[in-house]
Image (cartoon, rainbow, N blue to C red; front, side, top):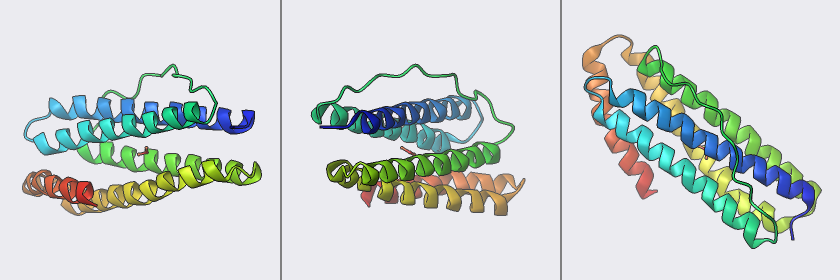
Length: 169
Ligand code: FEO
């Protein structure tokens, strides 16, 4: 059984994962109307789907543990970006915020001596290590590319490989 504190904290994470899905969906829609970046677009759409999966996993866990998962109201995310680099910078910042939030949840689980939730959260801890590392790699590459259109073309091809590798892990 979840404590009230744990349940509220997990529901806050439901909101954060739902908002993450919206944030990346908005990036995907914006990227889709930029010329020649089909794979970057697909990456954002897929990332948005993954965040929805993160949210659903939390919803099932809360309900399975005798709590009630609350479907949250969401604010509208940023709809446009000055550049692809800005979008990826924003993605990295967002993932760092999510990691901090997961760490906070782990703290609460330990305070509450809720070892089942602590164990459940380890999946998110591992996921955040991967997501942050991936976002950092992409930002590093975009920093190297600068304004080189040929570089961006290759980045768009490359992201397909990165995504596939990530899926196989
Ligand atoms: Fe579910 Fe990218 O954090």
